[in-house]
Amino acid sequence: MTQKKVLISGASIAGPTLAFWLNRYGFKTTIVERAESLRLGGQNVDIKGAAQKVAQLMGIEDEIRAADTGELGVQFVNEANVIQAALPKGESNLGTSELEILRGDLVKILYNHTKDDVEYLFGNQIIQLDEIEESVKVTFQNGEIRVFDLVICADGIRSRTRGLIFGEEPVVRPVGLYVSYFTIPRAASDSRWARWYNASNARVIVMRPDNEGTTRASFSFLSEPMGYEKLSTMEQISLLKQKFSDAGWEVKRVLSALENNTDIYFDAISQVIAPRWSKGRCAMTGDAAFCPSPLTGMGVSLSVLGAYILAGELSTHTDHQQAFAAYEKVFRPYVTKIQKLPPGVPKLAHPKTKMGIFLLNTIIKIISSKAVQKLGSLFSGKEKSSTDDTIELPDYSKLVSV
Image 1 (tube, rainbow, N blue to C red):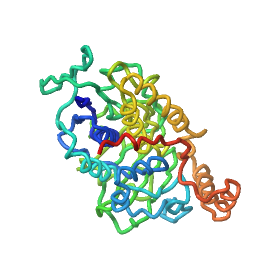
Image 2 (image 1 turned 135 degrees about the vertical axis):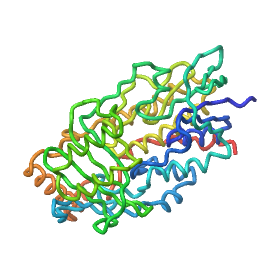
Image 3 (image 1 turned 180 degrees about the vertical axis):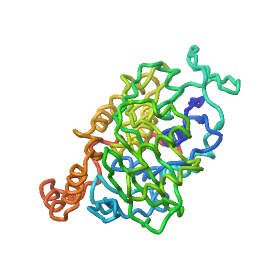
Image 4 (image 1 turned 120 degrees about the vertical axis):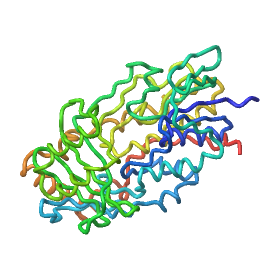
């Protein structure tokens, strides 16, 4: 039987995970990535619950643990850097998870486990898709035209490939928060603990340790959609200076590190709400399909789970439309649940006044209390639950062709 050829757009996390499983099930996969090489920047990400089980099935859990950032937890500090509250690693969904890894390190692990069996096309992208009979004709930016059985969009929240398939149908919904991530030199005040600082007027600065001898910093601030994500990098740096120059704490150090920084990510935190995840012989997964926003802490986990389930259903069903329908039936209820942000988020974590900051730190201190944690475990009937792991993970093990 001829191998089905699948083109995947996006070489971050969802794409290579999907390719890994499709290859296991006997598909011939190609990944196209707009960047000239792997995009290795980014902050800490974590893999939770059922997604951790998928990592175990892929044989990469030990590699993820070995690349751990070493973060011990999160300390909430005041302007004088005095700790107001702390959440040690693994003791709360609000803090550091069991499996914390730099996004770039996870991308490298996934690439290394797929590069020998998957065709990677870097520095290229899809510019046109045409369904012809029982295949999809794909036109690439470099002028090449190729034919595939299926095309899967597995790239980012502002995916261009998604637009070619679904047009404006999926909605990118801002949650009222802007964030900027970047890497800065490590200083004597940095430790293996992440430090969270709230400034008045709904501003937050966070500094987290990594395993590369540097510090991962971020700015976030509440704002209605203003189109800031469309500004040039220099304009965004200027905006951050304007917003944070009087924030106190170590802001001068952080802002000075922005001057010649080429590792800056700036965006409006948003969710992707799509009424359907497939159309004809094309489908999507990962952030392009159902980004829950970083506020949920489940973005990477959803990408891993969605790729695993999509690959499994494509292997279970000979008809791609039935496979796509089954993929949505299994996974959409869980995605919908994860995308429901708790009341008050993100405003609760970004108080405007000093009194609001004091109340936030008091709440964190209560949450981190050993007595409260013990009481919670008594009522729940189980010890510390690392995440909402309510999805029943399908077993596709009988499909493995190797």
